[in-house]
Amino acid sequence: MRKHIVAGNWKMNNGLIQTETLISELKQQTKTSDAEVMIAPSFTNLWHAFQSTRQDPIEVVAQNMHFADNGAYTGEVSAGMLKSIGIKTVILGHSERRAYFNETDESLARKVDQALEHEMRVIFCFGEELFNRKAGNHEDIVERQIKNALFHLDADAFKHIVLAYEPVWAIGTGETATPDQAQDMHAFIRQTLEAKYGKDVANDMTILYGGSVKPANAKEIFSKPDVDGGLIGGASLKAEDFFAIVNAF
Ligand code: PGA
Image (tube, rainbow, N blue to C red):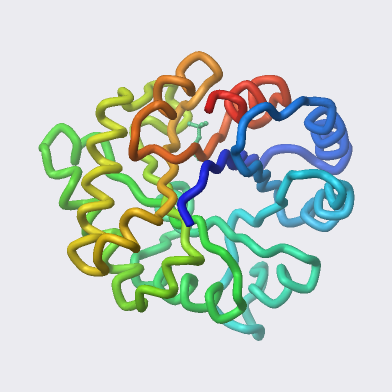
């Protein structure tokens, strides 16, 4: 089902004390929109964050996971480990994972399969770089990223997937895609889904936009018909800003 989602990707920020503080500040905020709210703290704080938001309408999600069940993968965390502490959703394919940790469409396809096998929901991220946009092949890049990592799945699997379009040139740069650029790409993503899986899958897909979303621009971006929410980095680290975005619907 298509829904509004605002997810805060904390990235490699916040130790235990800051996590406690930010969560208690988030709890003081009032939600006036229908958006589902998610936060993605670091692995070390997932359990604590999960425990302390049990009674609140905030879902704690992971920023990444490995594609294997278990074994000799030093430093990695599995789907089973996440599930064992109550985590049901994982962000996969963030551009920082792709750029700094060599994640490829192929390894991401395996991660997606693994998450779905463990009945987890996936927030699957993708997006073009600035040179792609300048060369005018941003749609081709996005289409390839989606096809390579997801198009081996059957239509039913898409019930457990949320897409997050994040143009790399807009992440953490203060540069946002214009609401029209976001809308155009989200409409293109829906067309791409429709061509392979039909209208229902395309219409039901929740597609988030990410890249320098702030309280000042969220309303306009979220007003676009094919934009169903946001994946928020920097602005998710301040409770008030994050909730201003949550309430921008
Ligand atoms: P940003 O990050 O909001 O800081 O640009 C977005 C993201 O990386 O998900």
